[in-house]
Image (cartoon, rainbow, N blue to C red; front, side, top):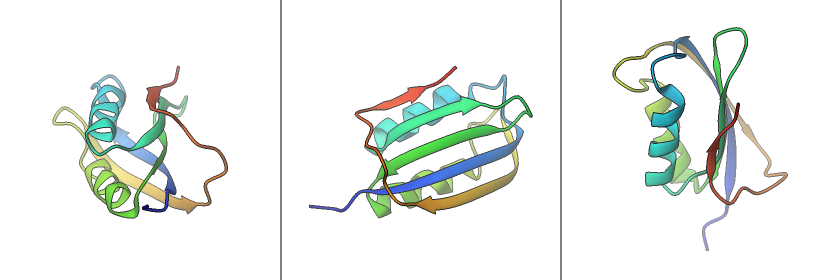
Amino acid sequence: MNEQKQVHVWVSGIVQGVFFRAHTRQVAQSLHVSGWVRNLHDGRVEITAQGTQDALERFVEWCHHGPSMSRVDKIDVRWEDVTQTFDDFEIRY
């Protein structure tokens, strides 16, 4: 069985009001990644994602670009230990 990994991502740029969270959930689900995504008050998007190393690397690569209407200026990635598990990928408000 593939060991579950976890990554915490903060995305800066034009990432709110451009369906970034909805697209993030779609990409996560297509890669069998669980976790959550939410907007932050400072204009960034925050993501916690869990999955296999390969799936998470592909997911983070997508985060560098985001959906077509977004503009990603900066991405901060922090690999973490899995402290809790998620059943699906949700948008948090």
